[in-house]
Image (cartoon, rainbow, N blue to C red):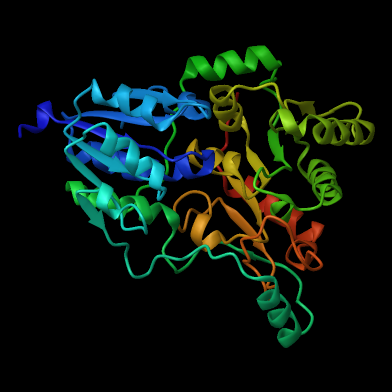
Length: 379
């Protein structure tokens, strides 16, 4: 087939951070098929992430309440030649099978391989995000004794990062599997719009604070430590903070905003929790000089728009899902050496030692280092 007429459907992933980690694979796919027509099928909540992305020609969306048949009917009319299934779910493969896409590529997984025409086996070095059983966690803690204080890791190491999962898959369509940094583009007009809407002064070094994590409390550093880190960092750098979060984070963000405003009445933070669209969040993060965050979607967005990240990991692993590309110098990963970490659980079944072992002092130093080594920007 002439590649200039090839119609490629990519079934995207459903979480913000995972979506950002697919951007290197999509860029490699575009590189291999420069004249092909690439359509991304994504959840409607993520549609704005792909505005003007160079790897994608069109975006199709589905809703949380939409059934698999409605998605398949939408796809069938477009007559795609090949479909690439990025998620590991049964449903995502079924959508393309019902749509009659003649060539369907995805990872080998139980109960869905027959839906694919080209099942792909993962690389041997892919890390598995296995949820540890409670009895295993207890055995690890007992056998190791008391956990030592937290430490900063400047770059993830083996096993292979999650972004390689997607790169390996697009290689089945002739794409180069070598990694690229995750990339999201923000236009000058979008930057100008958010500066005007939220009155972001050009004379201020804005730092972002993202204290929530949607996955669950096991991924959340204690709010009082975020506050203490923000306060000490502001004393040292004369920054101002943008408090970020979604609609469910409004109450926590308001408490943090009030606390910091009492400490710094002449340079209070701005509370943007629940006030930004996804595209506006991309622009706000682009304007930040540093983002201090848990392991969550905005962490990946910040790195993809070029902002240095200080990311706190407890139940999850920077080696598998850290922001940016391995070795990016501005990013700082804070992780304790708790023997049970990573457990990949939503709620800690013991004493939360993986997070409480990470000190405020460690975080303040990391923020300072990220600020010093990151790009200098003027709004």
